[in-house]
Image (cartoon, rainbow, N blue to C red):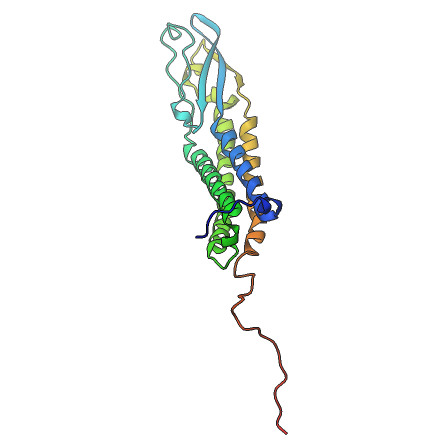
Length: 236
């Protein structure tokens, strides 16, 4: 490989500028999902307690089946309140989305270093453009899959932490006891993470064309003979 020569010129071209955007939006995607912390709360009335707040905290990677509601009072409603956990384990979809975003983050950093320091080697008949192109196509597909899986998981998370949680708590159905859904932490950042996932998919899909133009599939081989149509020679 040739020596490193810093050149900021590629950032002014679509190839480098879009890669910078991909780096930024990858950070926004995995940070808005991986940094979330939420709490769902209920108001519980039971034996010896009226409108006591119980809460279950949850966060990334959203193993809701490990999030338990606190007890309404020290007597646990005279023994009628038992530990109840939220329903569902959505860690696979969440971790897939975040892990892929982190990998894209590191790939974009590596690609930018290569673009800015070794673009002369990149465009000098090497195999790097083809490798970059294949990875770009794979990234488009995986952004689609990971975002779709995470979006479906997010819908289920909202159901598991929303008002319907009251219907599945046994202690709330005991005679003389009642539960009312109070609140759940806003999931706006999680909604935004899905949007960022879609934006990343669009960015990588658009960038595929500019990477393709750097490959030998688009550029003719300078060593190959020029082809053309010539009239057949005729004898006299």
